[in-house]
Length: 76
Image 1: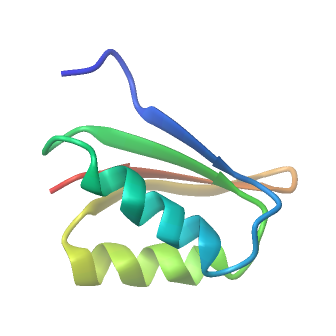
Image 2: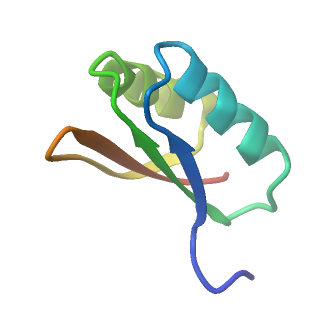
Image 3: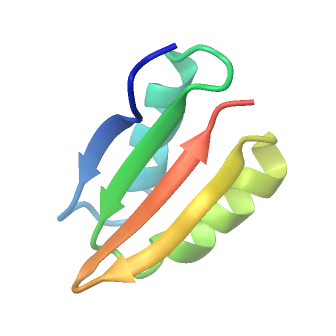
């Protein structure tokens, strides 16, 4: 297992690009690996919540820091 989460910087991208890039990254990862996504699109909050429910990947963290939304996903 890796030492920490894989980092995906999707800042500046509009929906649905942060989510699409996260899906691509998760597809390349092993089960239980974590992906940290940085985004600036407010619409990404709902996208990641719905995605985690539908995909079965765990959304471990979701918060706003300044103007950056941070998500921590764990691959199922």
